[in-house]
Image (cartoon, rainbow, N blue to C red; front, side, top):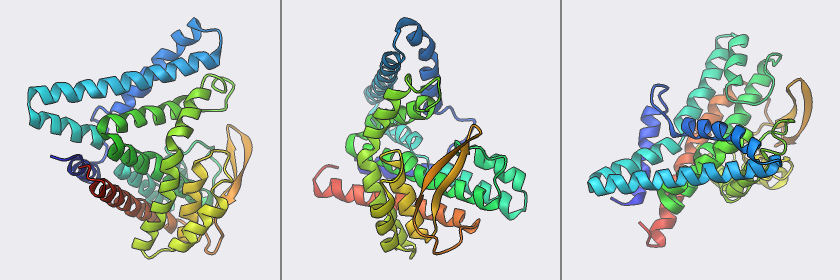
Length: 316
């Protein structure tokens, strides 16, 4: 069974099953490992930046090695077990269904007129203060989260899966988890999390740029605005403080004809974010559903384009 077939099977599993809470997930284990290593590394090294770098390298190395060992052991037991292990590992690295579920759960609360519940649900997927958000603010937060995670949770894992199989995909998930665990500018993590954030920036550099193009292809598939998507990504993608996050937000904003970005509160402090896209349409709850559909279409586009590239190159 080729890697391409395994990836498509894994995507199908993600689409139909998603991420059941009862199922042990490697990302949770990676997060636990990272937190367990933090205290001893801080104690061992006086420099927080050195401790953070070595923690990141240890987590990435252990994850890659564990993934490789699992695949080798499964294949030695039986070839079909090797394929099963490959599919399962790939399946756990994709998060399209989970992202769609979270976005639509926020939408459902807004459509019910339950703003407190919508605030609570959107708080699960964003890193900003949500207690005072109005309906527009909740919708904007949800769409921005879907946009950014279209790359982080779907396109980037697919990129690495097609590039280097399940070990590469799991290695990327370790990098992404480290960033979400330590990559904050708080007093605690500004130095310790420096390496995790920089490694994540490097890992996402190509996927973010390819992802902007794939979101435009997804917009074309859905008859949204692919031209607006590309123009917004080109014009606004570099405005974000992150070298990568702005590309996905700008591309999705342009595709939907809305404006994302603007002021947000984090831990009670105002953070003036740049604007992405043009407000050709007023951002509303319905754009959450459209963003989720665009994320799914972009996932399909990514899998198709990456499959085609591997096929043309003669790598199955």
